[in-house]
Length: 303
Image (cartoon, rainbow, N blue to C red; front, side, top):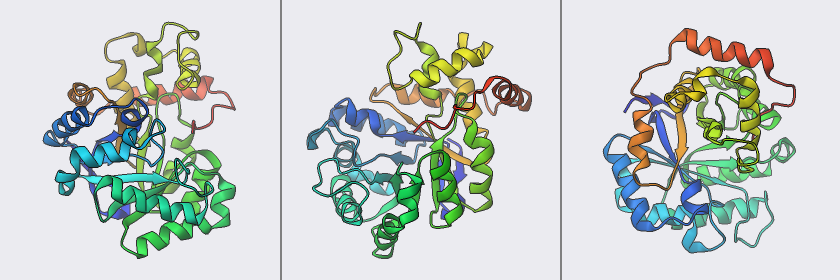
């Protein structure tokens, strides 16, 4: 699988990364996670991205624990990213330095490692970032050798501040057909600052799959509504997911696109979406043009 440099971190990351939300929220079994991630690593994936709050309310379901139990013995084969900031079972206020410190210690234990490759603040507000104490807590963890790099995961004005403040090595943000605001407003500034860019929701939650708004779940519903108005012709064809993913990976600065699943068979299907090669410039421009034509003022980045 193609490898790309993740900004100034120097990490050479796979174009596709694994996102750990579904395995936690949907209570995957360790055996299935081992099958899924084992196959992915064997075929070139080297990025695993998770968070301390990806769980169904008990430790056994925690995505970090599932990953540590399933893949701790292959730790040297992948870059390990997590996120912090939500209490999620820790007795400390959200977005407090105490929580950041306790959360990172728990993440290290769950993930069976003594050092993370990247710890990211998980979608906190601009106001929280401006206070500075959570950024200082991440920097303290870095200085103590608990993480190699620090990043911010989020959207809109908070993402713009995270880029401008100069504290972070990476930015994880939503980049897809239905979420293009950041492509013009945030990504160029992140690239200019030397930050690595991690794309989340790279296929817009495949929101076009649902037959109607009433059948679409709440989480992808904003994208479903946007895609209905955007009305890209390829969404009704067999290459919809491939074009969507290749569009995201074509954006300047994007190093890796995080795709989640709990299905052990899905990884090979996700990797096959890239078999068509880079998306043609004319196809990319047509997607931009349609966005500029119909995007509404409130179509901001989805957190």
